[in-house]
Length: 549
Ligand SMILES: Nc1nc2c(ncn2[C@@H]2O[C@H](COP(=O)(O)OP(=O)(O)OP(=O)(O)O)[C@@H](O)[C@H]2O)c(=O)[nH]1
Image (tube, rainbow, N blue to C red; front, side, top):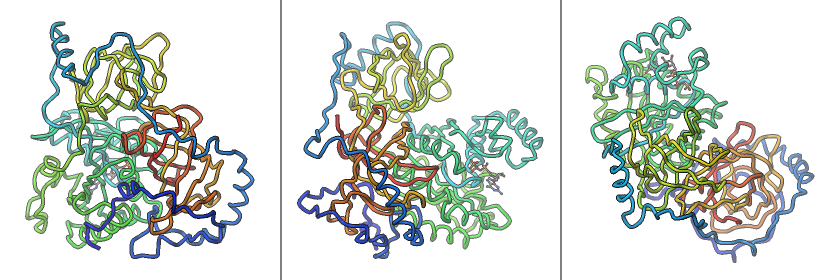
């Protein structure tokens, strides 16, 4: 199959299938669990489907039939096409339209506050993902060292501390892993954030944890990313354990893809390890095996995948090409050369503002961390916090390294000092919106869902099925209230069903206990795509197709 023929799994979900092809309900026996294996492509599941799980299906069905008490609250006639909500604030100028941004900037200037203009270089949010101990923090640490973002003397302290913790080779990882728990355990827990610049771009590094227990943190990092660097260890046995069933190399890649990342750099690291010795054969073996997964499971075309062999520990092939006497066979770009040219997502700074809140900081006043997903934010701007419908004034904008900005456009990762009303609290998942054009808020929505392997003890999805939804920075319980249809294996027909199994593509209705900020995927992808997880396992990825407001 040529690359151009590989469908994009997310675009593919957009296919409009007429209702007339919906057929009658099917029985369990009709459900072809292996259908996705019937062509040469790998199935759209986390790994190959586990056929042995079929034995448990009838048991699981009984279990969920008993739970099936909750009736969907509305039928398809009640569907409403959502319209952006309008809230009429008191005398606030429309922002982001008709050149009013410049008047606000002028107003700020007249206050004689010395504020930096945002750096004209493009901001890029670069998430590092991959299996536990692949070498993510080490390569991030070395990038900061090479770009002189970290002082040599501080690094010497880290070397001492790493020695004391009997983790001598972890000193570079200590640059990113700053908590005591992370340093003692030698693993990343929170998403580490740092900044560096190349000639043409400014990067926010998001160092995601590789350990399975911290996948929710990894998802929040991936939600902000413009580009993902998948770090793979070339050391004997390490690539294999990240790639095999349950390995985080594959899970992270699927999740990053589901969170909307389009371009992936595959950093094959630890090339210096004695078991590798910069072997071209090992690099090509990894490339051939992992490419299959990227193409056929994740549906990422080759032009969006960039391969670079590196040593994160020795800092080779990062800011300069690896010397020919070390690696004579690699003729491609070094990491920094690639970072200067890798395609970035389209940015839309002229539309109404959306900043999903990633976290809050309470020191002097209230600050929110977040990436501008759409629009432009200006100091002094009045915004609306959704879903709580409270006004918040942007008192200060801080960019990388706490540089004060007067305004920031789409793509910028910021800390925003907010002025809010008495008693107003913010939390991750809230969205700062244009006061004249806020996002939608709902507790029920319909979605197109790709299901992977389900848990052995919960083999069927039917009304009442409970799991956790990750939608941008929202993490909430959610429940399936209706299974509407299943796509047949050619994705040409929707078949009406009441329940479904794993490794299928279905249309479901979901609900959350409290209102969340959501949009239809076609209207605003960052608030329209999500991941479902159950008991620490990713069970599905989806796109919102309809809101029930
Ligand atoms: N030889 C060699 N060892 C490396 C390299 N990069 C990382 N390591 C070692 O691999 C181990 C794990 O490195 P980390 O950078 O902590 O891995 P990580 O992927 O950030 O780990 P988590 O975030 O906890 O998943 C440490 O002992 C590093 O010194 C490399 O390029 N070469």
